[in-house]
Image (cartoon, rainbow, N blue to C red; front, side, top):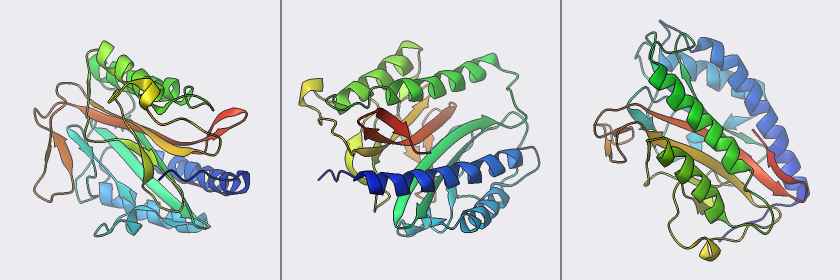
Length: 250
């Protein structure tokens, strides 16, 4: 069941999202050669607490970290570890914060060292990030969730990349993962998809790969990678649907 949020609730989520943005802003400088993903996670936990929040991801049963830190062929849900970042690695920093009882969820992918020497990777990441903002524009009252999915699928597939179809965006609020699913592909006629109403709050995610749409689990049964080990990435914002249009909360 989709739970719509009131203006007051969205205002709290917006403040939580603003604080989460500040956390990420302070974490980005750590995405550099020689740093471990566990060091980034430790700092994230510290910064979340400093902002008056709690880790959203630690509310997920069995997960003990504040971030997920996939690298290169790792798609999502990769646990922070002693793995050392190397120049040219593409790191996804996926993070959520619980603030005054409300969750926000946010993800970026960045190349260690700034830009990749491989222009194909730079283009891949640029297209993913641009697609997120194009998708957000479709989150308007009276529209359909399928229109968001349609934009994601069109942009990613038309550029020769692959949507990881088993992984989706989601509703968000009192719980980190709520209804509805926000697919990265059109799964039904658009006019049969969920009607977008005022107060809908969703995390839109662009989860895609260079070479395949097939995913497999690593040995820990958390981290998911591309079957062909091709590059993957994720870009995510939590957004709210208002009478003024979609508002990015993160």
